[in-house]
Length: 419
Figure: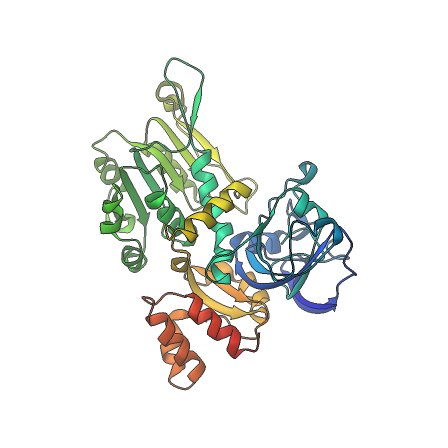
């Protein structure tokens, strides 16, 4: 069977290609990818090429398929898995397999599985690690969003605090505590805000910082102060560019005691150092954003480490249970994955968009792999719809859902494009 896929051949070398998949083995599964969400991690893989920890050294000779935030349908099931999976079943995949301690992951390391493809072969290790997850949510796009949500869920679970007088660590954020998300106005920050407000263990204060007021205003429309308050969370959106002393103003919001849980969503040393300064006693700082620079460093106050029990943790992705938690919360209506999506496009848009992802403003860029369509901002549907009835209809469907992407718009796009 032929597939179309975007493959990495080396540093900043992504190519949309058509090629034959090998015959499916008895311990494999053939599947069709419907949607994939572009991730900054794919940009980092493209920028580093074979130097990336998950990209094979021989990628120039044996290119791998990129994309790891995908959702699709099973086409055929090898005999080994016939009792566990069925053709026609929808699925998502947890890419951080951890198979035999390896960093290999779909979307980085494999020749025949990745999100930016029309058809894929799911190898044995995905099923053996329980990383092929049945999905029954509303819309393929929400399935694609489960992976980024799993990352922020994992990072919340990875936070830890000490127990005074003992050596036992308490895992997770402080319930009823004070939380700050620095540079939390991007797509991953949005997912973290959504989860922090609606999960079972919530802070009493959540401060989200950014430097662009229009982004903060849009966030406040999607994740409202009123909804947060209804869940027992005082939500504050704070523009650090509009104050002369961000540290003092942010500390004042805590009454001067500092924050229990601080998340840094940008690889900027000054932001890491601000996060450290904001920690209260026994505060935990989570460095969420993975840097490209392998020598990235920032100062940390070790006086506070010694006398104030401050500490740091980092995570890279979530695990299978995190992804299942995301799906469960979506199905219960407790998470709103549509808030993350700001652009949609077809497989043809992937190479250019991925290589320039840091320069494309907005949230998640959603790709429908069986579609040929330029990457298009939802905000541009109205203008494009004046000359194109296709975009006019998409604009109508999005406006019926507060300007957000939705299952009806997805169904119309797939039907119109012949999928």
